[in-house]
Length: 271
Ligand SMILES: *[C@@H]1O[C@H](CO)[C@@H](O)[C@H](O)[C@H]1NC(C)=O
Ligand SMILES: *[C@@H]1O[C@H](CO)[C@@H](O)[C@H](O)[C@H]1NC(C)=O
Ligand SMILES: *[C@@H]1O[C@H](CO)[C@@H](O)[C@H](O)[C@H]1NC(C)=O
Image 1 (cartoon, rainbow, N blue to C red):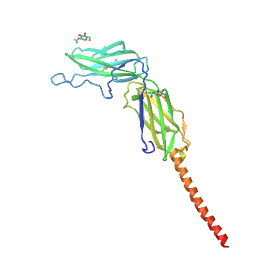
Image 2 (cartoon, rainbow, N blue to C red; image 1 turned 135 degrees about the vertical axis):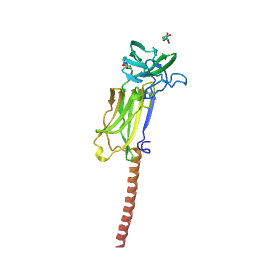
Image 3 (cartoon, protein in one colour; image 1 turned 90 degrees about the vertical axis):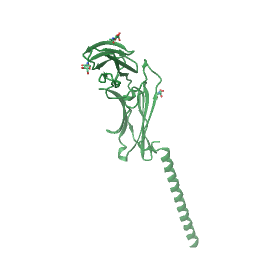
Image 4 (cartoon, protein in one colour; image 1 turned 90 degrees about the horizontal axis):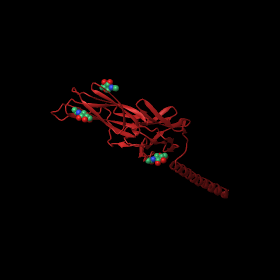
């Protein structure tokens, strides 16, 4: 519960079951550095490498992509590309081959490039994903509990989640931002972000918004929730506390009043 663990962040991810296209390969690759072939066993040319660039790219469904597979083979190498995507043009130069892939529609495709140099074959893998802008971004009315507002933002049917950044703003101030890099699911998913924060009385006039952005190597797509004003809407727990306090106060007043009344009556009967 947000009130028990302030600043707690809950992320719920549910993979949607609707897909389009084929999913080629289920390996999770998250390395950001060059995706190189593993070191060669001793005795072979340890310095032979194969790289693919870019290693991870997200494109609009139906777009084409260029992948550059390079190597440092000094002999005439033999290179090939393994993919189920449709191929377009191929260009090559010394130590590299650039492949075009057309009409990418699969949510996620692993494309492998193999290079054979002096009878040794090495490969490198790139992941191409198509993106899906959030279907909706909904900020629930904030709940005030234990002096903290719990903000809950739902982002539905977005892909790839690993490229998603969810930001909560209060007025023009960013109160929380989370990059979901660690999520590598291969289907559109729903994401719920929960964040608890303190707001003073002077913050009440400012709207809170939730922004969901896909940051796709230079291309940014996203949407924002409707703004919501912070109100003093009380949670059932705080309401219960307030009612209990009022009840206790009333009992005390009644007790004091009764005692006073009794005393007055006693004084009057004495007089
Ligand atoms: C994602 O959210 C949408 C809209 O609320 C819903 O229709 C869909 O079933 C959800 N998908 C999953 C996998 O929870
Ligand atoms: C492919 O990569 C190589 C090595 O990084 C570079 O020299 C070459 O210009 C690139 N080719 C294209 C078409 O980008
Ligand atoms: C180069 O690759 C082609 C197609 O993959 C293959 O038929 C050929 O035998 C290869 N040649 C060498 C020298 O590896």
